[in-house]
Length: 440
Image (cartoon, rainbow, N blue to C red; front, top):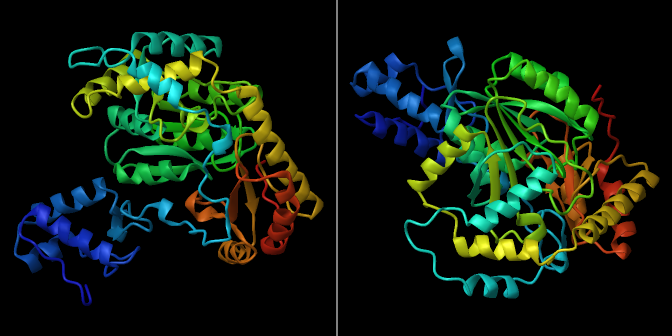
């Protein structure tokens, strides 16, 4: 029975829109079982193929899922519900450690870079989408880091690149192995594309090889990995884990590998890339964390087919990423506008100080690299509320989790040395007893 909400429509698009309205209003809650296709077709007096087409559209949009004989049901977290909405707005007087922004004091001034870029001639239609000097410099740095040879493209940030690469190879219904806990935007993006996410556990050295093997063995067609400064745990691939994962990928050469190196220039740990371990791969490096989130510029390299597909589809949309922005980022790179070692040390000092202070208070926390510290808690909602009452806004772990235990994420970029003790006291009071998590 549909209760108070009645699905309506005569065409597939109308039926799908009616279901989406019900989901959006809450009348069709997560887990709600939709009527069998023939039953709904009879009720609406339409052909069953019309309802089948509507359900297929809803699956592709990530609104519903089909579980064999259990029928079609509204997803527990519909794609229209962003994990980013699970945030705590910091009221006046509360320190915001939840948004994940870099420290503005460590970001370069953009005036000289934009002035230098503006001094160049206007970009015109028909010019190459990538500024040649940008591509050459980016490629030289990638070469120095051991990233395999490949053409260079430019996208509007890391998430834009991930979306374009996924859609270049996968189709709705395909499965993607994702880090758990992992970047909330990726966890939102996958179902929004009509894809299915399968979780892969993460420890301080990155994705667990056994979990990756299990996911790929069960049919996952893509794997998304964060090389360094993993959001939210700070994990970073080391040589041993990279070797283990390369061995797994060698047994699944047809899997699409996507690597996100957003921590470049804010992390002092070496890169251990997996790129080239499969036939199709993409390596992404954004400018957001080191140079500013508003610089929507990311370098993408990969196998020739993948990059060609991304650029071909890009031409049919935005066309290219502003060449003015490309030249501005190039100026930031070549002028040494950011002291990358100092930035990495600054974040590392704050992160390590907080982890030590928490350990002294009996609280276990993770944060090997980057700007975030991941703190397991016994009651996530209660911990966030108690921290807010104590004057600290934390990011709820639910934004980043699929199957892993409850936690909160703390971004250290706003912290000073004087903040560490009071924050650690507040976290210790809020966390509660937590059973240790084994990644063995």
